[in-house]
Length: 107
Image 1 (tube, helix red, strand yellow):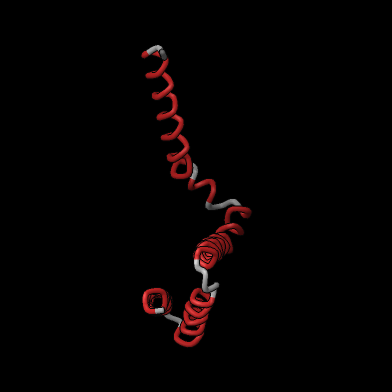
Image 2: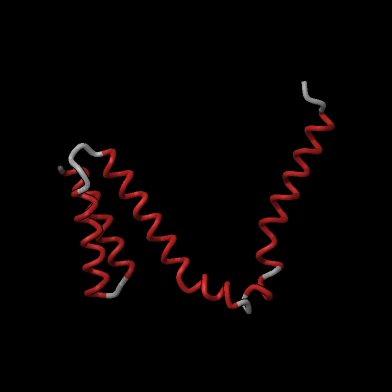
């Protein structure tokens, strides 16, 4: 059986390390804002992360469906077309999501 003092010390150490890692970006923010590498990352990283999340979720949903990836492709095409035409991200995402839900539940 584990010693209670050892377990408490491990929990306190893990908590302190977790808190320090979460607080570090806020403490170092004024230094990071001026660094050119961080500025370069800030220009493309959000788009790259969103693209990876969308590709991952679409691939997972398409792999789980016996009909293939056609519902996902159609929904993404609608989002892209609406975004290109109207330039309104909220409209594009809501419309694409609504189309996907209707197609997934209706077919």
